[in-house]
Amino acid sequence: MQASKEQLLWMFETMVAIRHYEETMVNVYLEGKLPPHIQKGLAFDIGSGPVPGEMHLAAGQEPVAVGVCAHLKKEDTVVGTHRPHHFAIAKGVPLDKMTAEIFGKATGLAKGKGGHMHLFDPEHRFSCSGIIGASLPPACGAALAARKQGKDWVAVAFFGEGAANQGSFHESLNLAALWKLPVVFVCEDNKWAISVPKTAATSIERVADRASAYGMPGIHVENNDAVEVFESVGPAVARARRGEGPSLIEVKTDRYLGHFQGDPEAYRPKNEVGTLRKSDPIPKLASLMKQRGLLNDVDEASLAARARQRVADAYDFARRSPYPAAHEALADVFVSD
Image (tube, one colour):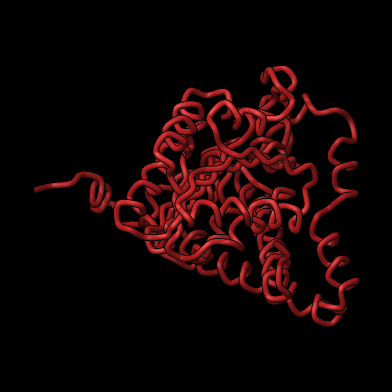
């Protein structure tokens, strides 16, 4: 299954938007968290600044999000992870409302009460969670609901290689296979489960090999490449739409930043990130498109500028938006009869 020109252009522009969004957040997140003068005894203040709390960014992992979401319809469901921005952007979640939510503003997706790890957009069928492995069961539920409604909608559960050792992984794959649910399980293998290398936590080299134990196809994508992901995921999504059941796809991808912002990354080998960045998937996709005559330098600059402007507008919207009123603290939290 080869991507069309329109799909390739969309993947490129979306990857640029994701990368710019995450790299912008690196600086925004640090505002107010570092002491004005670095002195002994002064610590990183995680609760300060316009974006308090933890922050997990996905720079480098863009191909997984766009390669999968390029196959999806608005009615399809995506359940992301604690590192969710690239999935949300690729699924079409509005950048302004998503950013406002991360800033804790009243104009956010959940009126500022969910934050970065709990983005929820029912209109675009997107959600995520801070719990490891929590994406798989809800995706099974969405897939079951679609089938019961007689729709050809599919659900996608994204998760990291560390989550493949959780009970929810095995339970969800077993249930999906048993009931032939239209769900695609996508493992992002960036080889680090926080600071634990995959080789120290997982008994097999390829998570995709576990698919055979549940009677479903298992596909391993070796390179952090948007086109390879697109071509590998296409048959799995089509299989799910035909009612033939689930698939498990594992993509080797690269995390350029820390597990969280402020992570000293002492566990990573020296120069690992520098080496990974030499295979940056964004210029790689642009180069491929130019080779095929689908992109020129002028178009590339125009698409990149448009993506960056969308991101700038979203951050500006979030900064200008008001905080929720104090008396609304419990609103929408409890359901009454």
